[in-house]
Length: 307
Image 1 (cartoon, rainbow, N blue to C red):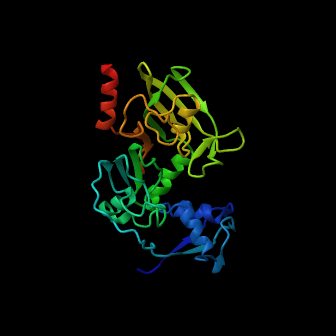
Image 2 (spheres, helix red, strand yellow):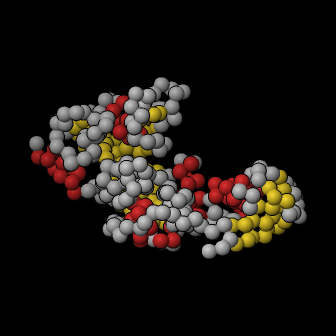
Image 3 (cartoon, rainbow, N blue to C red):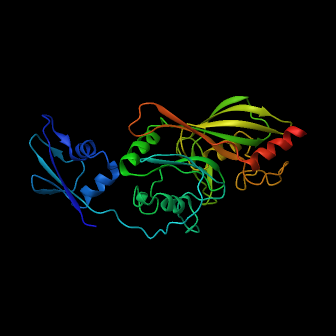
């Protein structure tokens, strides 16, 4: 596959940044990909190679862009069954199973959601990155539920912007040990890498980590446990698990932040991404995608209700 070339004419009266102009004229590509194309000396303005994103262009400028072919990846698609909630030409919405890693990483070279998605939708190859094609957001390995993936650059940019501006709404179901301080609440506690155990995250003092906000409501109360619906306003690694521990009610079955001795048997950490509310490309209204609580977690609730 060879490169293709696009020639654009800038006609506005006011000067504009080169990268802003390209994003406007080439919406099928993400901003980051266009900026990379600029840095790789693949863009000229009036015949001059430009390498700075913020270069100003003026009325009458002719902008030429060389679009290199999508890089192939070493990832081998794997025919792993997917529980598909919704799919169109732009996105793939999946009910991810617990135990499945979202994208390849150290120790997880096969069997990821990305490997499965590439087998189902080969056109996703290279979208958003060679190792994480289509990945817009993530769920922990042992967290089940709704996750959305982009099938083209335009969709990737459209979805990423909603996550960056925090207009996406994500709601989780969590069973926790004990009872939270109040039936409903808002948790604002910054999160950073744990200084003692680098594979873990930790709640840290204000100003030392990334801002993290969660809101919860009580769905059902038991003698020694509480079922919560948790909405996250930020998407930090292990956010819900850390915030639940922070208020004294760790997630049941959490191997990293939970109690060592559990008062009820759970096959895994009791955390499920139940609902994702987001706009899709070319649609005005917000879509709501839902995944019901898996049977193995529902059975834990059945046991609690029987006591």
